[in-house]
Image (cartoon, rainbow, N blue to C red; front, side, top):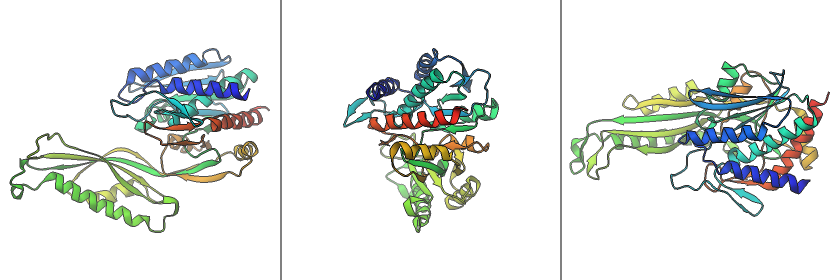
Length: 368
């Protein structure tokens, strides 16, 4: 059974990896939704519903006549955009599946799909639901937020395998700001730089000042639990080697810890950047705290034979939309690495282990 389970999880994960589900490829996202629906359509006792918000699809599979299941699996199928020449394929090596999205989070989704079908086959009236969205990497506004806030989706507890590790359950996430910082000015010839207040150089100077401010926050922050500022993109339409550009933009990623808030961080950034820089907030989310089910912690320790560590996550996830409604959230996942790269990987044995954790937890949780 163990080998058969492992084979099914590997095959489904690799099938999911083959579909490039980045935001720049909406047709492939629709294809992935159809693949998931096909995988679920023979499951008895559930109702499958597809939604679209601002053209972004999501899917729910809920037990019939139970709009608020006791347990709801939550996953996303989208992946970050990789270079155009990236290969969306997988390989197996050293007990791992390598491939774009294998870790975040197609391998975890494969586990959810398989255990969902198995539990409903064994417990026809199981109060277990599943939700899959396609915009987590872009903020989740038209996926999880839309379903919970506009469609009224609710549950007793949500399981979101998008952070932590096998014996590490996430109880806190940093807040996030994705920003566009822009500098404008007159263009000029690079041979006479004294005639132009170079927008590129002004922007770089401001970014260095902000970076220096955030570096001071490292002091006393163990396990890197401090606010960070990272420049991810700098771009300009200028393509001439000898021309000073008139407009320059930097995309930056800010992660912050309590007691900071999005409003406070934006206020600080505006102050540090000064009036000459244009600041646009692309994505924002506050810090989040979670309360995992003690039963899940107990089952994890039983299956793995190791104590559970309650940990903090430097990333953000769709879990923030769920916990903001007072719904308990469980966040752990298989052993993974190299997230958001072509060489993302997920450990195959840990996938089977997490499956067995879910199995025992659900059988205890759902059997009245």
